[in-house]
Amino acid sequence: GDCFPCPQEGCPMMGHYADRFPDKLKRVNQKYFLNTAADPPFATWRQKVFLKLSGVKKMRGDINLVFHDTEGNTKEYEIASGVLSQDEVYTKYLDVEINPRNTTKIEFLWNKAIFTLLWARLGAETVNIIHGEDGRR
Image 1 (tube, rainbow, N blue to C red):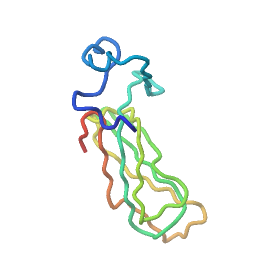
Image 2 (image 1 turned 90 degrees about the vertical axis):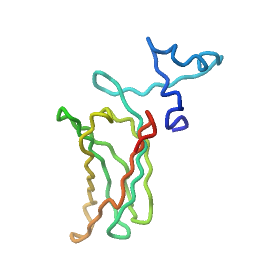
Image 3 (image 1 turned 45 degrees about the vertical axis):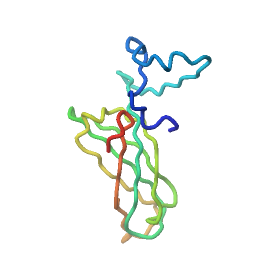
Image 4 (image 1 turned 90 degrees about the horizontal axis):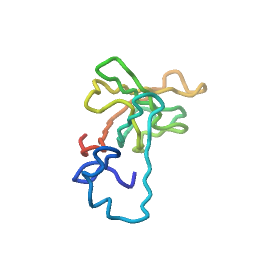
């Protein structure tokens, strides 16, 4: 998350377009890290998620977001797990396998722990997602 979002000149690229970032090539002994997806085409898009809950004060469970794209593909990502509190803002960096430009819907899923009261409800008061590519929300 230290390089998030991408600098004003854009995200560095590897391969054919690497020469678009000449200032970065002047540095010596620089380490580079690359996050890839498990499936072809192996691309991921870094996104930062801020999530504020509403509902019961505290409870156990987990929260996931499901990203949907224009071709019907979905990918699910865990945002938080354990004791959840409506007083906290949960922040997480995700390397999403669905291009933000093709995202049609983001679904909020809450799974409560087995011993949670039946009437207990939890929801998302706010969900903000910042795209690493250009800082868009």
